[in-house]
Length: 479
Image 1 (cartoon, rainbow, N blue to C red):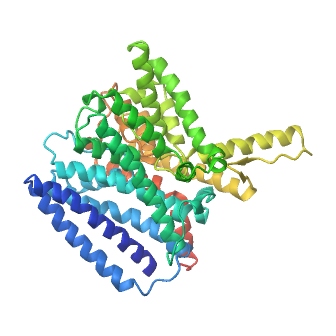
Image 2 (image 1 turned 180 degrees about the vertical axis):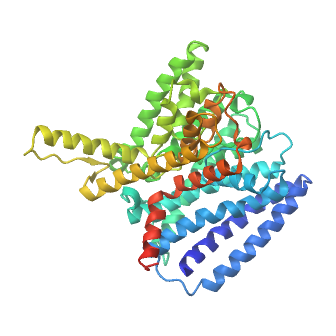
Image 3 (image 1 turned 60 degrees about the vertical axis):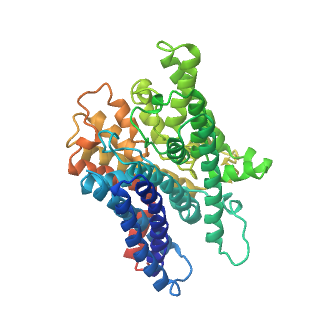
């Protein structure tokens, strides 16, 4: 347990430091919320620091139980802590504040604010900063803990190349440093590019945070159409795709390791999927837009959906494809080691290749066929993990939909909300509900529905396998 609390203290310490930015913004603008953020930053920082220094000499090597425990406890605790300033500095009640914080940290982008008019700049920045921190925590969780442990069939191939071991840094420390550097680089480039397109500095910073983390929070009402910046939209498309592709691929590209980045099929599959979906969206927009505008908005909407970001240029754009197609695309998600949500294309691709192998064996029982993805052979244990993960994911979505159906008017609304929460694309529910006047917005959800959404958002990020494995470790008394 010491290792879990020690890891949590480090994360809370980062959160306390992050609270200083909205505190400064509030104090500079003469906003009383600035003092609230400052007080909470001091309180959280004190508790984190005291825990850190108390346990510093009592923590050993991060084993499986400690790693899984740290993942579950951290993701369960952070929304509660991040909700404190939202509950004290805004009209949101406690549950709504936790919902908003969980939505930000899981990069879901579902909001309980009816309007952003009157919301302080400090709170607007904190919401976008939460997405950015949640995206970074997602990458560290998957690349640093879950993938090396093989949770849910995740592959750790290529992770070692993210950071360069130097001096006395442990493997985990240089991995975290490597991920953070890449993430900061992408964020800096995105914000700089948005500034060059003429966006206001505050909006460019908030949108940069939301884009790289594939979150859906906006710093103002009206969506991206309110900026009237095609160049800004183009920048956001590029960095949404960067956010939805694998960080191991990013490292290979930055280092010009041609052999490594050319073989990373999953990231190319994400890009190809964006292209295919963009054609479908462009065709749906062609009747109401000039050809060039239809292609541009189609590409933007496709990138937003595939990477589970949730941005829209026009209201209801994500729901422009017929039926449940947008929901299924969102459920598939982006690359495994990315900030995108969903089941992940890595798993879907692996299962499709395994199915192809089984069909081949039916036709050629004595044949030998090696099937791999990104250079990794598909063994039986791996395929069991992948299929089990898919089964558990479907179970979570169905269970969430059942819980939400107690309030929502139709099963379609409940299922859409469940997928939006699990796949971290909250705006998809709002988009599909544009023409469904009976669909309540998230602010109108009752306490049960909001709680179901919060739990589903978190489970979609930590992988249900991690939670079940932790329960198994408790049952075996090995934690």
